[in-house]
Length: 334
Image (cartoon, rainbow, N blue to C red; front, top):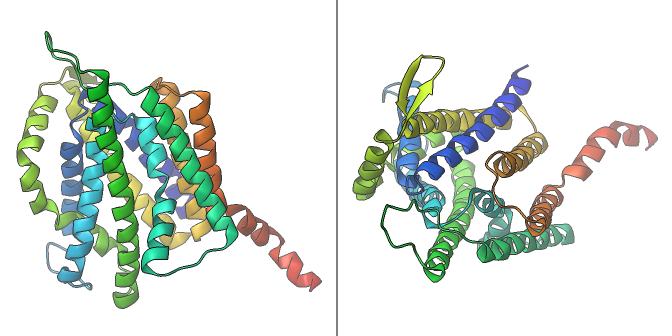
């Protein structure tokens, strides 16, 4: 029951989080820093109460070691959310972030001097081609995500394309820093043991002072959120600013998503976690395309198929399923 509940909450939390995120960026494409800060603040407060017991529990991993991890995590989160302010549509954002395997492999080869079997290189080639196809097609159809102010001069196509390129650069930087962060996490866990709840808490608490450098941007977009159109909340029978409702929904579902994935990692095999996360991304992408009527051509579908098929090959989902089914019988025959 615990596993079934965790899987259900991953789909509910993570998919709903994407919905609230897209609703938010459609209202205000520049709200990425506000969203990131709000997520970090809530998870820090929850961790302060339940993980550190109001600061009475000392961390098992040194704060100095955490600071390197925190810096990478902060940059990754800000880049990913801030990219929406640079004409990046939600489907391309999700497809691009699915390319984390490429970055992980490159970092593994460069830093850890790893070598991989042919299937790994094949899968990464498929993912790379899928992302390239989607990026090129999206580049031909790129539109401004900025809300036009009355009597303002609309941006030229060259300006729109330039800022879109900046968004792609931000996503690329986030992809590789995230991959390096994963390797560094492995080093910390090998040295100190696995303490994921503690890591979750400190990676969200320690970056909070960094948001001071973004305080004016966060404040401006918080004011825009407060001035957004009112939205009726049927359950409460009250109305509240639309963007504030979406922001609260995004922050709460983000916490649900992260905590549910953690439960899966402690209760299930990596195979189950990989399957659930991959399927979740696919359903989120489908929902974004259908519900929000995002532009998605046949070339996007080809690119998306390559990304998800390459992901399945890389994680060896099919062989592991076959082995788990036929394993006992194989042993009997032997």
